[in-house]
Image (cartoon, rainbow, N blue to C red; front, side, top):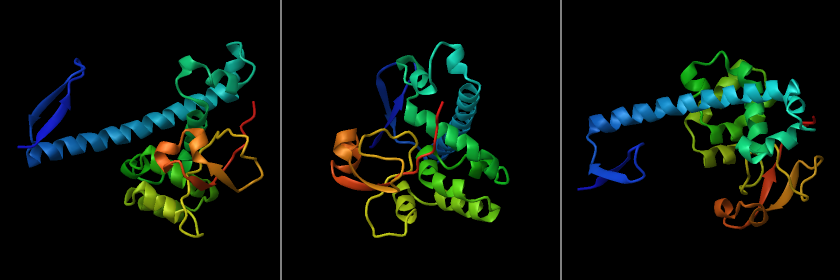
Length: 203
């Protein structure tokens, strides 16, 4: 009989149990969905805190010259790219207030990064609703395929804070060697074409 892995919080070992019943599986599925909604709520809260800290010059109050210098500290444990993504997501949150919570927070982080440029470009509630519902019912790879009108090449999501001497602020499309930037595991070390959206985030 198949075994189900359950990790106990108080233990580093994995305890194997018998396969879940339909009722147990449904209950755990509901818990997973609930936790996913909570995780997006926490990301929005993180984005709000970061915006307040950055715009309020909190980093200067702590002795740092720039926000980038502060957010790059190892003990911050966020990273520059994630920090700017969280802030961008928080800034578009007012556009989602007309949506029910299960939709507003039901599209998880990786999907939100893919649809973020479209959400930033529109204020039409109906279009925003359509974008969010499309994200709910499609995989990340399908959303990436839908996010451009060009040939079926591999595109990346619009990630804030990408740093590379191969990227410039003025190029909407650039050739990008994934193997040189730690993305080889995701893209098989192949050269991929990215649509990069860059927002000015100066201190």
